[in-house]
Amino acid sequence: MPDYIPNVRLRAWRNERRLSRAEMADQINATPIGVAERLVCDEERVRRWEAGEVRWPRTPYRLALTQLTGREPEALGFSQGKHTGSGGLIEARVIPADALRAEADLYGTMELAQQLQASDVGAGTLEALAEAVDLLCRAYPIVPAGTLRDRTQKRLAQINHLLAGRLTLDQHRELLVITGWLTALLGCVHYDLGEREEAETARRAAFEMGRQVGHGELMGWAHEMSAWFALVEGRYEDVVTAARMGQAVAGTSSAMVQLTLQEARGLARIGDRREADRALTRGAEVLSSLPMPEHADHHFVFDHAKWVFYAATCYTWLADDDRAEEHARETIQMHTRPDGTSNAPMRVADAHIDLGIVHARRGDLDAAVEEGMAAFDIDRRSLTDLVNRAGDLDRVLRQRYQREALAGEFHERFVAARRALANRRPDLLD
Image 1 (cartoon, rainbow, N blue to C red):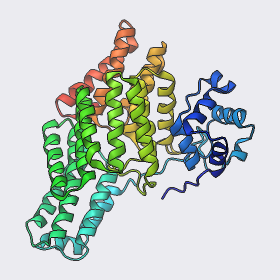
Image 2 (cartoon, one colour; image 1 turned 90 degrees about the horizontal axis):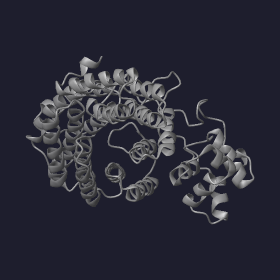
Image 3 (cartoon, rainbow, N blue to C red; image 1 turned 90 degrees about the vertical axis):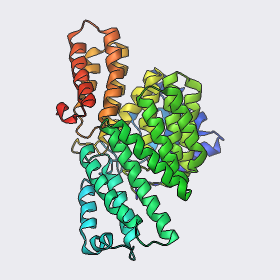
């Protein structure tokens, strides 16, 4: 589990003055340093400070806090004990790069292999299967989509053998849930690879399994996948509709947070700033009620860093450039290991696109193209998402710098990526 230690001193200071987190954030932005540095503190940032997720804020925020409270950061409960040199954030947790190997080892044990070949379920089989599915879901951020698709399909074929065997009602229900999660994961990697029909088939199957057993969170994630597909395909009203349908069944869960943030993204695309901000706030409120995840790298777990990532894109689409830049840089910092590699490369790629768009709107073509090219250089990528987001940057560059050679270079890279997606050939980008 992450070793977050709540910052009780900061919370006590705020409570003594009867300030909400949003009110405190506004006061920080209104300090002299806040105005000079154009800080964009918000309720979620204050929540993360109080939760101990950020132990040493960046310099402008430390100065603003001192101006607001009259106290040094240490007196407010902050500590330099564990922070990165670049941004004061807790060092990014290293996602287990051997998750796929661990899953293979689990399946390779003689006991489980024998049970999978049998016509009934022995003791411990379901627990081992659930652990194996968790490992595959944790492999999602870093394992190439094609590799993960093939492994997931293989496991589904093996597990389907058990569904035809002798099962109690409880065993059948649990196995359907396990199969449902694996099918949802398969739908995600299909979509990453541009295999849209296969992705939708898997999504519908996962929803049906969740419906059969009354598993609200699994049904919620199936709705979330529908919202994601609609977002990429430019059906923004459908994004909001699917997200709200999912919220009706998801309960207080990671799925609920993700659905609320997808709603915010759909609203941001439509240009409804007020409702998008409200959805972001609702998502943060649900997130704050959930326990810290043991495995934040799990694809169907909404970790606290993901809120920052989603907010960056929302603010980019709303042309709120200061907030977009702040959240995008924070996303990159949170997910960069000491050796420079990333534990969430797809999020980092999106953050680079967000920064590219911000730079382009501010008139810095060199920086815009540099950020955009950095997104293409990410190893683990969702080609579908990458082409969609790169298209955002390409449109801005072509509108503002149509005759510039650098803009043309990025356009060529974007066209190559779009061609690779159309041909289902992600290797064409390597």
